[in-house]
Each structure stands twice: as structure tokens, then as C-alpha cells.
Length: 263
Image (cartoon, rainbow, N blue to C red; front, top):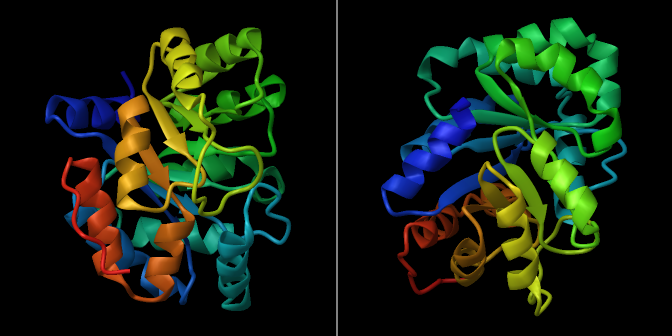
């Protein structure tokens, strides 16, 4: 069982749903990365997805795209993020998952990137522009360093592809809950329960729900279908607005506590 699986299973044993916040590294300046991760860790999140700013973020909606633009304007790069993580590695106890695109990894050099991930405490990697069929190159470079390659499965994936993605994914299966890019949604498809039932039957590792989840109520409803949730745009917005109360409300919802939102 990998570090990410263990973290999710331990959360389940505690009677909670896993909660993974997405942050854009360097939004607000690279110096914000350390206090943000340590604060989220203090809130007892299950893992943290660390987004890397990129000029062509094809999977991301306007909120995360704007955050990436702010980080890029501050001079943030993949290399600088990993070096910053390594600088306070001893303080990081929560598993980190890096979300980036393939070009920055290729430019970094696969083996050097893998070693930098180890130095920064990275336990998982999400690369949305590398499909399942092309992911062997990442597994070959990262798996020897105990870094999981997490696969995304969409709502439109047919059963045979769901089975292959579930078999290939490591750490957890990232179940995309909407068609399209990231960003808050007010509603979701009516047949998500059937989709998640098929996914959980096909997968021997945890299934996490992500994309569009932005409120405590949605954390609870999506958590009921899955092993936990990933929240991106709502976290990015809250961090940009320095609204830690909203973040705390989302984390509490994963623990079954539904606060009355102040937003």
C-alpha cells in the first residue's frame, strides 16, 4: 500500500472522508507556499495537491488559470516550487501530490524531476495531458522513487476503459465529476451515483471525486459517493481572498460537520 493509499485508509478508519485541497504554488508569491501547506496540514487534510503554473493549462478553468498567471508573473517555475518544498521538507508530514503538465517535466528531465520530487516530499503525480496509453514513461521514472502516477477517469469513459484506468492508477483514482474543465459548479449530473458505483467496483484502490466541488454541502454529497473529495477552485479563491474560514468549513464537511457558511 502506497503512502497516499495509507493516508486515505487512515482517514476512513477515523470515520471521515478524505479531503485533498488543490493549491496553486506561488499564487501570492513563492514565499506563501510554506505557510499555506503548513496551515492546511494543521487542519488535518488527507493530502495536498500542489499545482504548478503553466502557460497552457488545458484542464483548468478560469479561476485556476488566473491563479497560474499570477504565479507565472511572480516568476514561479516547476524547479523553484520543488526547491522551495525541499527547503522545508522536514516540516511536511502530509503527502503532497504535484499536478503539472508534461512539457515542464520533459524540460526538467525525467530523472532529475523524480529526484527533486523525492527531495520535496512528493508522493504522487497528476499529469492531465498524458493519457493512460502514454503514462508508462512517467511510471518508469517515478515509480522507483515511490511516487504514484494518478490517473483521471471521466464521466464519458466506457466500462472497459474505466477498468483499465482503475487497474493502472496508483494512490487513488481521480474521478472527474463534470464534463469539461475545473471550476465551481452549482449542480451535477443525476446519474453520478451509478457512475461511482461502477468505478468503486472496478477499483481496488480509493476513488476520489474532483472537479466542480466548491461548497461544504457538495463535499458531503460527493463524499457519500466516493472515498473523498478534491477541491480546487474554491480553495484557490479562498486563499487569494485570505478566507481561511471557508477552507476550514470545507475540511470540516469532510469530517461530517456542516457549518453554516458565511459566504
